[in-house]
Length: 269
Image (tube, rainbow, N blue to C red):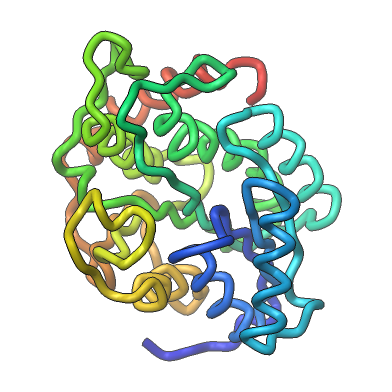
């Protein structure tokens, strides 16, 4: 993968305080991009930007801390408004923030199963709120950091919050499938990516060991590079473009998911 200069690019990375998100922010800033570093709290976002300056030797001018708890739509809205005010043009949005679904069925203050909201619905909301910034010039794109587990999933259309039958693996896989389907939404050019099984907080869902977060991040960064041509809705398994699960390519499901997410996000969108 050739490393082109990204000094004219402004890129938002959600979930950038640890794991693949942190390494993605680091690699993008090393290549000259202005990186908007998202964390769940202002303290976590600032600590990550401080660490990138102190440990990676990156100029503080290339890093901006932003925060929103994705379990609260109101905070996502507030962050989006601040981004548009400060960065009216955004080249790339990396939808990376994610949690492992908890053992017990957990519902957010907005009334959604927590993994579905944090891993998908809040990214759906953020993407739509930032659409104006992403499309202000040609070439804006979204990279959804999804998972190979989307292949094992189904979307419980009539019970997306899985109140009747809950399993943490099914809930997590559903959120990853939704993120993969969402990449085919026609409003903003987007792709989804399985970055490999990496040694991050989500590793227990996959295996006992994985590659480094930096290796996973390199695949994300490759898709952020304007020199990498992408097709809307494409799915990548690390550096290879492959077909996603059949459900993710069906136009009917893209529309159905949009309607469902729009309903669950409600007035915030």
